[in-house]
Amino acid sequence: MWIQTRIELRPRPRGFHLVTDEIVAGVPDLQSMSVGIATVFMQHTSASLTLNENASPDVRRDFAAWFDRAVPDGADYFSHQLEGPDDMPAHIKASLTGSSLVLPVSRGRLTLGTWQGIYLCEHRNDGGSRSVVVTAVGE
Amino acid sequence: MWIQTRIELRPRPRGFHLVTDEIVAGVPDLQSMSVGIATVFMQHTSASLTLNENASPDVRRDFAAWFDRAVPDGADYFSHQLEGPDDMPAHIKASLTGSSLVLPVSRGRLTLGTWQGIYLCEHRNDGGSRSVVVTAVGE
Amino acid sequence: MWIQTRIELRPRPRGFHLVTDEIVAGVPDLQSMSVGIATVFMQHTSASLTLNENASPDVRRDFAAWFDRAVPDGADYFSHQLEGPDDMPAHIKASLTGSSLVLPVSRGRLTLGTWQGIYLCEHRNDGGSRSVVVTAVGE
Image (cartoon, rainbow over all chains, first blue to last red; front, side, top):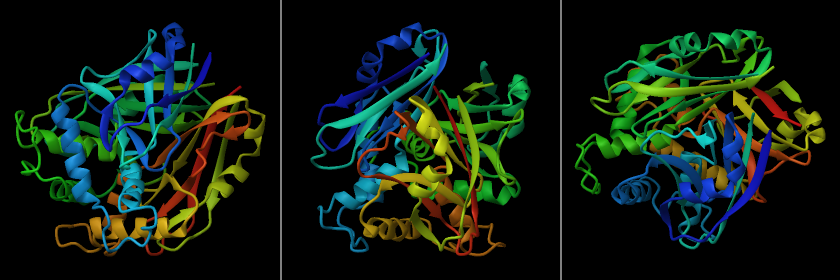
C-alpha cells in the first residue's frame, strides 16, 4: 500500500511552528495502514523540518534564539547576500535541521513519542507557503 | 516483509554512546532480508541518534566537548529553563543530530561503512532509559 | 520493486559539491518507478550528504565558510588529533549535516523542489573517493 500526497503549508513568520495536525490531516489514508514508514519531505532550501517538543511554546522561541545566534544574518564571511541578509543563514539552518522526516507507522498512526511534534522551521523573513510531500509505504 | 519492534536502551550518562550491537541484536529477523531499508527512530526530544566513528572513544568525548560549547547549558537567551539548565540545550542538540537513521539492508545485514557505528546521543544529565522503534521493509 | 546500487563518487577537495546528476545517472531503473522512496546513504564518517540550493556556487562556498568557523580545525578542546587537525571537525560536521537522504519518487523521478540539489559534503582535506549506497523501493 502506497500513499503519496503534497501538502501546502500556509505562510508563517520566521521561526519554528508546530504543524503535526496539518500533516496528519493531510494523509487520512494512513489510518488503514497497520505497519509502515512515512516520510515527510520539504521541497525548499530555506525552510526545513524537525521533530521536537510539542508542549511549551518557549521551546520553539528558544530554537529561534539559538539558531539566529549560531548563524547570524548578514555575517561578513557570507558572499551570497543578493537575496537579503536572511537568505544564506536560511540555507545553512535548513541543512542543520534537515529536509526530511522518517516516521514509523503503527496501527494507523504515526508512532511519535508523547512529547514529539513536527516543526516547520521557517528560516526566511518572508518565506511564503511551503510544499511538503508525504510518501508512505506499508500494509 | 515488514519488521517493527521497540528497543529500550538502558539509561546512560550524558554523552555519546555506541549502541550498534544493541540495535542489531534487537532485530534478529533482519538476517533473512536480502535487500531492504531499516529505520531507527528515537521517541524522545532530548536524546537523538547519529552515525559516526565506531573505533576511538576520543571521538565520542570530543562530540560532547563540541556540542556543550556550541549549545551552552543555561545560556541567558533561553527562556525555557524550568526543567533545568541542560533541558533546552538538549532539545536543540537533538534537532542538530536528528531523531532517525535510515540504513540500507543487504544480504541480512545493515550496510554500514567499515568505521560507522550508531550513536545514542544522550543530551540530559539524567535522561533515563530511551525508546527507539526499528522499522524495516524488504524482501 | 527494489533497486540497490553502490555509487563511487570521485575524490573532491574539501568543501560542498553538487552531485545530483551523478546520483541520478547511477540509478537509471528509477525511471520505471511510478511511486516510491529512494534513500541515499554515505558509508563514511567524515563526509556527508545534504540537500540545498543547486544554482549559485556562492552558496556552497558560504557553507564551507560557516562550517569551518563553527567547527574549527585543531581546536584545543579536541583530544582526537592523531589523524590531523581536520579529522575531528570532519566527524562533527558529518553528524550535523547527516549521513543519509530520503527522497520521494514520483513518475520515474526524484521529487526534488526546483532549487534543490544533492550536496556531497567533503569535510577532509584529502578524503579520497566516497561510497554511497542508493536503495529505492516502489511500484
